[in-house]
Length: 279
Ligand SMILES: [Zn+2]
Image (cartoon, rainbow, N blue to C red; front, side, top):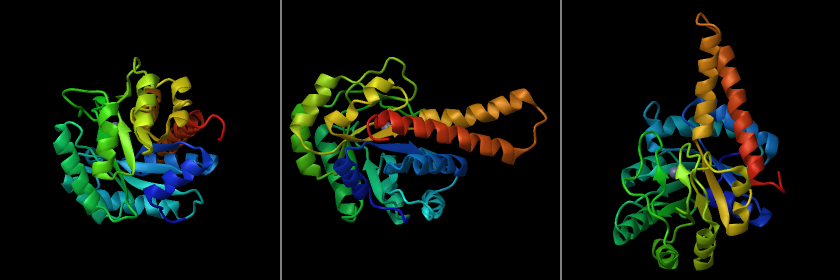
Protein backbone atom coordinates (compact mmCIF):
# COMPACT_ATOMS: atom_id res chain seq x y z
CA UNK A 1 0.00 0.00 0.00
CA UNK A 2 1.18 3.49 -0.74
CA UNK A 3 1.46 6.05 2.03
CA UNK A 4 -1.95 7.45 2.92
CA UNK A 5 -2.83 10.91 4.19
CA UNK A 6 -2.85 11.63 7.91
CA UNK A 7 -6.56 12.40 7.58
CA UNK A 8 -7.20 8.88 6.31
CA UNK A 9 -5.38 7.35 9.30
CA UNK A 10 -7.37 9.59 11.68
CA UNK A 11 -10.70 8.81 10.02
CA UNK A 12 -10.07 5.09 10.00
CA UNK A 13 -9.10 5.20 13.68
CA UNK A 14 -12.23 7.18 14.52
CA UNK A 15 -14.49 4.81 12.64
CA UNK A 16 -12.89 1.70 14.21
CA UNK A 17 -12.48 3.17 17.72
CA UNK A 18 -8.70 2.88 17.52
CA UNK A 19 -5.78 5.02 18.66
CA UNK A 20 -2.92 5.38 16.19
CA UNK A 21 0.54 5.13 17.59
CA UNK A 22 2.90 7.71 16.09
CA UNK A 23 6.40 6.31 16.13
CA UNK A 24 9.51 8.37 15.51
CA UNK A 25 12.07 7.10 13.07
CA UNK A 26 15.62 8.26 12.53
CA UNK A 27 17.16 5.56 10.38
CA UNK A 28 16.47 2.39 8.45
CA UNK A 29 16.62 0.06 11.48
CA UNK A 30 13.95 2.05 13.31
CA UNK A 31 11.76 2.20 10.20
CA UNK A 32 12.03 -1.56 9.63
CA UNK A 33 11.19 -2.27 13.27
CA UNK A 34 8.15 0.02 13.26
CA UNK A 35 6.72 -1.49 10.07
CA UNK A 36 7.35 -5.06 11.27
CA UNK A 37 5.18 -4.33 14.31
CA UNK A 38 2.49 -2.56 12.28
CA UNK A 39 2.22 -5.63 10.06
CA UNK A 40 1.76 -7.87 13.12
CA UNK A 41 -1.01 -5.76 14.65
CA UNK A 42 -2.78 -4.18 11.67
CA UNK A 43 -3.67 -0.86 13.32
CA UNK A 44 -3.40 2.35 11.23
CA UNK A 45 -0.27 4.19 12.26
CA UNK A 46 1.84 7.31 11.83
CA UNK A 47 5.55 7.06 11.16
CA UNK A 48 7.07 10.40 11.97
CA UNK A 49 10.34 12.28 12.08
CA UNK A 50 11.23 15.50 13.83
CA UNK A 51 13.47 18.14 12.17
CA UNK A 52 16.15 17.29 14.74
CA UNK A 53 16.29 13.74 13.38
CA UNK A 54 16.75 14.49 9.70
CA UNK A 55 20.19 15.94 10.47
CA UNK A 56 21.80 12.70 9.26
CA UNK A 57 19.67 12.19 6.16
CA UNK A 58 17.00 14.67 5.09
CA UNK A 59 13.26 14.64 4.50
CA UNK A 60 13.61 13.07 1.03
CA UNK A 61 15.67 10.16 2.35
CA UNK A 62 13.12 9.49 5.07
CA UNK A 63 10.25 9.69 2.57
CA UNK A 64 11.94 7.33 0.10
CA UNK A 65 12.81 4.81 2.81
CA UNK A 66 9.34 4.75 4.40
CA UNK A 67 7.48 4.70 1.08
CA UNK A 68 9.60 1.85 -0.26
CA UNK A 69 9.17 -0.26 2.88
CA UNK A 70 5.38 0.25 2.83
CA UNK A 71 4.98 -1.00 -0.74
CA UNK A 72 4.47 -4.52 0.59
CA UNK A 73 2.29 -3.56 3.58
CA UNK A 74 -1.52 -3.56 3.72
CA UNK A 75 -1.93 -1.33 6.79
CA UNK A 76 -2.64 2.39 6.24
CA UNK A 77 0.36 4.47 7.31
CA UNK A 78 0.91 8.24 7.11
CA UNK A 79 4.32 9.91 7.11
CA UNK A 80 4.22 12.81 9.55
CA UNK A 81 6.48 15.74 10.42
CA UNK A 82 6.81 15.80 14.22
CA UNK A 83 7.32 19.17 15.94
CA UNK A 84 7.76 21.42 12.92
CA UNK A 85 8.99 24.39 14.94
CA UNK A 86 9.15 26.61 11.89
CA UNK A 87 7.33 27.10 8.62
CA UNK A 88 10.61 26.18 6.91
CA UNK A 89 10.42 22.73 8.46
CA UNK A 90 6.81 22.39 7.27
CA UNK A 91 7.87 23.48 3.80
CA UNK A 92 10.71 20.91 3.77
CA UNK A 93 8.41 18.05 4.74
CA UNK A 94 5.73 19.09 2.23
CA UNK A 95 8.31 19.34 -0.55
CA UNK A 96 9.37 15.78 0.27
CA UNK A 97 5.70 14.67 0.01
CA UNK A 98 4.98 13.94 3.67
CA UNK A 99 1.28 13.21 4.10
CA UNK A 100 0.82 14.85 7.51
CA UNK A 101 2.60 17.67 9.35
CA UNK A 102 2.76 19.26 12.77
CA UNK A 103 3.31 22.96 13.26
CA UNK A 104 4.46 23.62 16.81
CA UNK A 105 4.24 27.29 17.69
CA UNK A 106 3.01 26.42 21.18
CA UNK A 107 5.72 28.41 22.95
CA UNK A 108 4.69 31.63 21.20
CA UNK A 109 2.00 33.88 22.65
CA UNK A 110 -1.54 32.68 21.86
CA UNK A 111 -2.25 35.03 18.92
CA UNK A 112 1.15 34.29 17.38
CA UNK A 113 0.55 30.54 17.75
CA UNK A 114 -2.72 31.01 15.85
CA UNK A 115 -1.10 33.13 13.11
CA UNK A 116 1.79 30.70 12.53
CA UNK A 117 -0.42 27.62 12.69
CA UNK A 118 -2.98 29.16 10.31
CA UNK A 119 -0.15 29.96 7.89
CA UNK A 120 0.89 26.28 8.00
CA UNK A 121 -2.73 25.37 7.22
CA UNK A 122 -2.56 27.55 4.09
CA UNK A 123 0.67 25.84 3.04
CA UNK A 124 -0.75 22.30 3.35
CA UNK A 125 -2.68 20.81 0.45
CA UNK A 126 -6.14 19.67 1.62
CA UNK A 127 -5.10 16.01 1.68
CA UNK A 128 -2.23 16.68 4.11
CA UNK A 129 -3.35 16.52 7.74
CA UNK A 130 -2.27 19.36 10.05
CA UNK A 131 -1.54 18.95 13.74
CA UNK A 132 -1.12 22.06 15.89
CA UNK A 133 -0.27 22.39 19.59
CA UNK A 134 -2.02 24.44 22.25
CA UNK A 135 -0.38 24.60 25.66
CA UNK A 136 3.25 23.62 25.79
CA UNK A 137 4.30 20.03 26.53
CA UNK A 138 7.18 19.81 29.00
CA UNK A 139 10.23 17.58 29.03
CA UNK A 140 12.93 17.23 26.42
CA UNK A 141 13.33 15.39 23.16
CA UNK A 142 16.83 15.43 21.71
CA UNK A 143 17.88 18.09 24.23
CA UNK A 144 15.12 20.41 23.05
CA UNK A 145 12.22 21.39 25.25
CA UNK A 146 10.17 24.44 26.14
CA UNK A 147 11.46 26.92 28.72
CA UNK A 148 8.03 27.02 30.28
CA UNK A 149 5.64 24.11 29.99
CA UNK A 150 1.99 25.03 30.32
CA UNK A 151 -1.27 23.12 30.32
CA UNK A 152 -3.79 23.43 27.51
CA UNK A 153 -6.49 25.92 28.50
CA UNK A 154 -9.88 24.37 27.65
CA UNK A 155 -11.33 27.88 27.26
CA UNK A 156 -9.02 28.54 24.31
CA UNK A 157 -9.54 25.24 22.51
CA UNK A 158 -12.71 26.00 20.53
CA UNK A 159 -11.46 29.36 19.30
CA UNK A 160 -8.00 28.03 18.45
CA UNK A 161 -9.27 25.09 16.41
CA UNK A 162 -11.76 27.29 14.57
CA UNK A 163 -9.09 29.90 13.78
CA UNK A 164 -6.42 27.40 12.66
CA UNK A 165 -8.64 24.75 11.07
CA UNK A 166 -6.25 22.04 12.24
CA UNK A 167 -7.15 18.37 11.78
CA UNK A 168 -5.57 17.30 15.07
CA UNK A 169 -4.70 19.14 18.29
CA UNK A 170 -1.72 18.24 20.48
CA UNK A 171 -2.57 18.88 24.12
CA UNK A 172 -0.57 19.39 27.27
CA UNK A 173 -2.56 17.70 30.03
CA UNK A 174 0.11 16.22 32.29
CA UNK A 175 1.96 14.36 29.53
CA UNK A 176 5.71 15.01 29.32
CA UNK A 177 8.26 14.26 26.59
CA UNK A 178 10.92 11.61 27.08
CA UNK A 179 11.28 9.27 30.04
CA UNK A 180 9.27 10.99 32.73
CA UNK A 181 8.37 8.43 35.39
CA UNK A 182 6.14 10.90 37.25
CA UNK A 183 4.13 11.98 34.19
CA UNK A 184 0.39 11.42 34.64
CA UNK A 185 -2.54 12.45 32.47
CA UNK A 186 -4.97 14.79 34.24
CA UNK A 187 -8.13 13.12 32.97
CA UNK A 188 -10.41 15.88 34.33
CA UNK A 189 -8.49 18.42 32.28
CA UNK A 190 -8.47 16.12 29.25
CA UNK A 191 -12.25 15.71 29.57
CA UNK A 192 -12.67 19.51 29.68
CA UNK A 193 -10.55 19.84 26.52
CA UNK A 194 -12.63 17.12 24.87
CA UNK A 195 -15.89 18.93 25.73
CA UNK A 196 -14.58 22.15 24.20
CA UNK A 197 -14.12 20.76 20.67
CA UNK A 198 -14.63 17.66 18.60
CA UNK A 199 -11.15 17.97 17.03
CA UNK A 200 -9.20 14.70 17.26
CA UNK A 201 -6.61 14.99 20.05
CA UNK A 202 -2.93 14.04 20.15
CA UNK A 203 -0.96 13.06 23.24
CA UNK A 204 2.83 13.35 23.09
CA UNK A 205 5.10 11.64 25.59
CA UNK A 206 3.75 8.10 25.19
CA UNK A 207 6.99 6.54 26.46
CA UNK A 208 6.60 7.98 29.95
CA UNK A 209 2.95 7.28 30.67
CA UNK A 210 1.74 4.20 32.55
CA UNK A 211 -0.04 1.53 30.52
CA UNK A 212 -3.33 1.88 32.38
CA UNK A 213 -3.46 5.58 31.42
CA UNK A 214 -2.53 4.94 27.78
CA UNK A 215 -5.29 2.35 27.55
CA UNK A 216 -7.96 4.93 28.52
CA UNK A 217 -7.03 7.68 26.07
CA UNK A 218 -9.39 6.44 23.33
CA UNK A 219 -12.32 7.29 25.63
CA UNK A 220 -11.34 10.97 25.50
CA UNK A 221 -11.15 11.65 21.78
CA UNK A 222 -7.43 10.93 21.51
CA UNK A 223 -6.57 9.42 18.11
CA UNK A 224 -2.77 9.77 18.01
CA UNK A 225 -0.18 9.04 20.69
CA UNK A 226 3.48 9.82 20.06
CA UNK A 227 6.18 7.39 21.14
CA UNK A 228 9.87 8.08 20.53
CA UNK A 229 12.14 7.50 23.53
CA UNK A 230 11.24 3.82 23.95
CA UNK A 231 12.24 2.94 20.40
CA UNK A 232 15.43 4.93 20.45
CA UNK A 233 16.49 3.34 23.69
CA UNK A 234 15.72 -0.15 22.34
CA UNK A 235 18.16 0.39 19.50
CA UNK A 236 20.90 1.96 21.59
CA UNK A 237 20.54 -0.71 24.27
CA UNK A 238 20.89 -3.51 21.71
CA UNK A 239 24.17 -2.11 20.44
CA UNK A 240 25.40 -1.40 23.97
CA UNK A 241 24.70 -4.95 25.09
CA UNK A 242 26.36 -6.43 22.01
CA UNK A 243 29.49 -4.43 22.67
CA UNK A 244 29.49 -5.23 26.36
CA UNK A 245 29.18 -8.94 25.56
CA UNK A 246 32.00 -8.83 23.03
CA UNK A 247 34.13 -5.72 22.46
CA UNK A 248 35.51 -7.42 19.32
CA UNK A 249 32.05 -7.84 17.77
CA UNK A 250 32.14 -6.90 14.08
CA UNK A 251 28.89 -8.34 12.72
CA UNK A 252 27.07 -5.07 12.22
CA UNK A 253 24.29 -6.78 10.28
CA UNK A 254 23.57 -9.28 13.06
CA UNK A 255 23.36 -6.58 15.73
CA UNK A 256 21.33 -4.33 13.39
CA UNK A 257 18.79 -7.12 12.89
CA UNK A 258 18.61 -7.66 16.65
CA UNK A 259 17.95 -3.93 17.03
CA UNK A 260 15.12 -4.11 14.47
CA UNK A 261 13.56 -6.99 16.40
CA UNK A 262 13.86 -5.10 19.71
CA UNK A 263 12.24 -2.00 18.19
CA UNK A 264 9.42 -4.07 16.67
CA UNK A 265 8.66 -5.59 20.09
CA UNK A 266 8.48 -2.14 21.73
CA UNK A 267 6.19 -0.80 19.00
CA UNK A 268 3.90 -3.83 19.06
CA UNK A 269 3.55 -3.58 22.86
CA UNK A 270 2.67 0.13 22.65
CA UNK A 271 0.05 -0.40 19.93
CA UNK A 272 -1.60 -3.16 21.98
CA UNK A 273 -1.55 -1.03 25.16
CA UNK A 274 -3.17 1.87 23.28
CA UNK A 275 -5.87 -0.42 21.90
CA UNK A 276 -6.70 -2.80 24.74
CA UNK A 277 -9.94 -4.01 23.18
CA UNK A 278 -9.04 -3.93 19.49
CA UNK A 279 -5.53 -5.18 18.97
ZN1 LIG B 1 6.23 15.81 21.04
